[in-house]
Length: 472
Ligand code: UDX
Ligand code: UDX
Image (cartoon, rainbow, N blue to C red; front, top):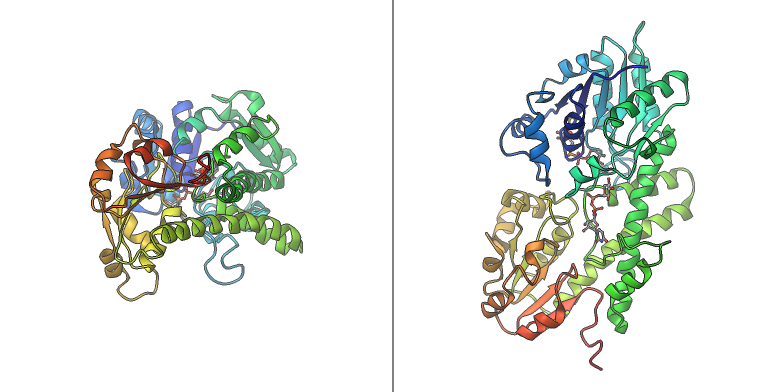
């Protein structure tokens, strides 16, 4: 069995960066080199301002950088030196060609695999860390084997990442489980043990689960689909709550107290976002279709459709409440990230909402504590549209704080559940005083105490709550 002393991670993103930084933090005897093709990203990892915001990440990186943790664009040197290589490049949903809009684009995975095959002069354990469709490891193995010569041997493992952004470091330091899939061959099992031993530096043995390759790959897609399904389920119920007078928080609490259901991931919202849920479910849908299981595909697809419905429903509610038009009205949007404690905006509900507001000719004032203005422009621009940047600039202002965004607004819309937007953190009286009247407030995150906010004078709508409930 290989005693891993040197690890290379290809892809210095949200997954590869934090994961391998924590390995370096917990395993001082292992040299960890994180590589990326993107020079700017590597420069940022080597600077005082890391390229991603994640609570606790700075402490971990600053503690080990230059000791046993390195960031570089010299991919080949890192591959040559490593016993074990994590492939952690992105796998976006395909935009064109076969499976467009559903299947994962594996071009980066294939590129990284080919590079490993080309460069390696000794045997390697290659670990698929990116979330991929089932059986991707098989393709990687074929590429590696076709290119390996003589005594060089490659073992492939699947080791999906379950960290959630915003709590990545906590999740990595204290994972519910670490999953390692391997081919059930003597060398496959031995490679599996080598990687398990890395994690055993800090993860209790009973939390390291070993399975075959396909179970591991499918478990990652399945876990995300099951989590997202819970949110779509509670969001579907939120529509019923609004129509009846049931309160979605009360329903979630009452249901979540059943230990078979549990309380987590039952928070109704304006819709889930993030780089994984939609992409992974669509992957599962595509897989089901390819396996000629259309009913299964439809079943999972509904989770995504419900998420789209929830966003559209919220927009419709806002427009109808504002007397059926938001043309030339100022809408303040609080939060742009897909959830709190991250600067990541991938698939954020804010993007869908704001694009709709712009289509309705509203002026949108945006504030988010962590998202860079440039990112907001990029997310709102429509590819292929002439002067799209100019149009976006005309339709939005990016503000330095919540008060500035809400000043002169007709409506405030809470899209991300940042703690600083809570009623005891933000002075809602001050916001109210500076708004157009009637002043509307739409809470897409069930963050506020409606009674308290109504007391100030706001007209309030909270997802999953009926304004008139309890008063009839
Ligand atoms: C991504 C996917 O979203 C996730 O599903 C998968 O499990 C892992 O990859 P993330 O780390 O969040 O997760 O992506 P991203 O932040 O885009 O990082 C990927 C990095 O790989 C980028 O920095 C990119 O520059 C780099 N990359 C990509 C390479 O170094 N080489 C390549 O060939 C392609
Ligand atoms: C998710 C999985 O949790 C993680 O295990 C996997 O590795 C990657 O995908 P992430 O996307 O970072 O992690 O965040 P998560 O906390 O799962 O939230 C996803 C979205 O769901 C966010 O937009 C969040 O606001 C929303 N959400 C979450 C709800 O609307 N309600 C909830 O109860 C929980």
